[in-house]
Length: 78
Image (cartoon, rainbow, N blue to C red):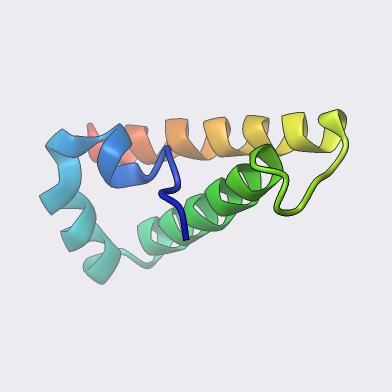
């Protein structure tokens, strides 16, 4: 499978260790990270036409991904 851009480790390389720790110790963070990963895959599959969808649906997925990314960053930078 091709490389999926926008993975959390790429987005926040300075927080890779903290993300790993939080995924194991904080159920809420782990849930957010899993949701982000799933949404990111959906966006990537839509962008590469593996699973085509309407522009509106793709845009909504991107908005959800951005909101999750913001929430995750808030937890990482706290």
